[in-house]
Amino acid sequence: MGARKAKHGLPLTIFFTIISLLYIYPIALVFINSFKKKAYISKYPFKIPTDNMFVGLENYIRGIEQTGLIGAFGWSLFITIFSVAAIILCCSMCAWYISRVKTKVTRAIYILCLFAMIVPFQMEMYTLSKIANMLKMGNPWGIIIIYLGFGAGLSVFMFTGFMKSIPLEIEEAAMIDGCTPLQTFFRVVMPIAKPTCITVVILQAMWIWNDYLLPSLVLDQRKYKTVPMAVQYLKGGYGSVDMGAMMGTLVLAIVPIIIFYLFCQRYIIEGVVAGAVKG
Amino acid sequence: MQKAIKKYFPIFVLPTMIAFAIGFLAPFILGIYLSFCDFTTVTDAEFIGIGNYLKILGDAEFIHSLWYTALFTVVTVILINVLAFAVALLLTKGIRGTNVFRTVFFMPNLIGGIVLGYVWQLLLNGVLARFERTLTYSEWFGFWGLVILMLWQQVGYMMIIYISGIQNIPGELIEAAKIDGARPSQILRHVTIPMVMPSITICTFLTLTNGFKLFDQNLALTNGAPSRMSELLALNIYNTFYGRAGWEGVGQAKAVVFFIIVGVIALLQNRLTTSKEVQQ
Image (cartoon, rainbow over the protein chains, first blue to last red):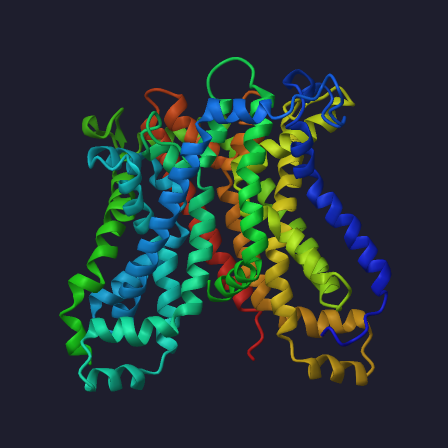
């Protein structure tokens, strides 16, 4: 593709450069405003913070203090990492089993997983929060189990699609050589399933990290907050929102994601494409 | 081999199934049951038949949010897909900077809906302030604000899928069409579009369900203001559960209706566009 010289190459490049700058603008605007005194943010959002408007890092400090953002980062990381790890491990095992053992039960599991993918969260949210409450799962450990259950639909579906494409001979050879099913799975199947794992990791991590509603309903908010909950927390309560703290919090919520994205963008984009093709 | 694996059911399948039962199945079944009950907590549920569903019919706000959501979904599905496809076409021509543009356009997808909502609230309210309006001036300000936000977020995602679809078209096919004297518009219509039909299926599906299920952005951008007129379905259901005491049963019934709508749309859409796909 790259070798072919494009027609209208330069005008298009200029056009897309302008569009790209406009694309970044909303985030740049929040960044600029995060250095402004809170009273000026809503009044003059487009002005550069000069002498009397400039407040340094005050908004960031207030944002962190009001929302408990540092703790929220920790919990978000904890929940995302362990939920995704649980999803990868359990769902790939489940998918391998249901694609190798053909019974009515495994067929039913597969259909349930397909079904789970189209059920909107609103259908579940009230009863889920009550059940989680009854089972004392309103903590970051309990929510990992819930995410495993919720992520199972898509993940099992995607892993099953991959497992079906592996030639059976490889596994049969391993089993004849004396591998137990567990050894076969971890030594033979999982290494080949790596690309699918990456796709599932990316799709699920994007979802879990950014999820607001589920943790806000399930978690005990006084003890645990995730990043989206911390941002929304500023809006809660009565009276006007502290726009300064809001801007600082938004920047702090966005920047780590963008840095992470710039490092892993190739995997992320490939993962999304692979996920879409299978979904 | 099947026999050897079979007795490993507890290790391979059970952990996922237990979590699935707690996180998905039990709430789903309980949810269906509760939609026919009057309750304030799960334990005091009393079966009342279809009373909750009848109440929905008289709930003007819900009916309004239903149309509002349908319109929002139609507008976003069309705009997102047309724009994403156009950008994908231009970005597969091999122009300079393609990778940078792709990276930039995809970026908003990594940022959560709540954060995006507040980012755009600042920008849009700033622009509207020049005309002495805010996003919550009327339901249509919120509507178009949300449309712009969704375009900004999702065009990049769909573009990525379209780009991969376009790149998978065999080069000979386009060459052959050119040799036969097809104009660019004809190539687009008779070669490119039929060949990327699988991508179109996926992207319409994703944008449709995203539009219908949208919650976070709606909550952050307008939170339904003015007076619940810019509420999408998901937010309306949420507010019925948590904003209106004694209406939990109605909220659950709404959720069931919502589930049926999303399910039917997903199935219909899948039938419709899959039938247009070219066998390769």
